[in-house]
Image (cartoon, rainbow over the protein chains, first blue to last red):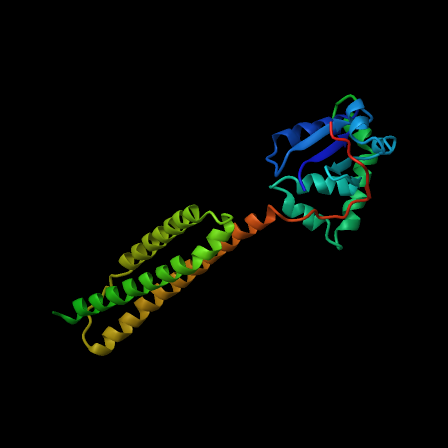
Length: 121
Length: 133
């Protein structure tokens, strides 16, 4: 399995910050970052529910496997050599529930977090 | 030849022989690991293997030289054997430590290499057709 497409929310400061961080990280393979609900996203995934992608991070493989929310974050970690270890650790049965709760919390309050960090939404 | 010199010579020959034996074992059996780590690139594996063995020799021979000095005169064969036993025991422990350290390096390298082909940590939530653009 090769490149991943990441659908991110360009309206949120936190997501743009992560986007920048991601660009500096070494990667196992190419990461294709597309803004949510953009034309290129709709063209590439014509049957995807694009309204849903506004709610949380979405990662799609080039085979069409869709990872949503916490699983998408784990897939991003999995793509990075420095963090692949952590993707398995956080996905273990003991930690997965906590991972899901924390990631959902961050995703839901991403505009507040961005605002608190002094960035416009 | 005094008994001190004889003890030193026996110490040196046994320690150096042990170092050569352990280094040879590492060199011979570490190769398979390294070939796997470097995805069958045998020349790279041989090169790294050789470099590791050189480091192993340097550290061990250096240690053997450093602890050579006894600091007291040997009067009897009994004392000679006791002194040899302590010295060679120390050398063996350091060799053992170095050997396990090398194994650790090999397994680390191998783990990192297998990580590269490891599957995703979670199952997908859904599947969607992908339009190649």
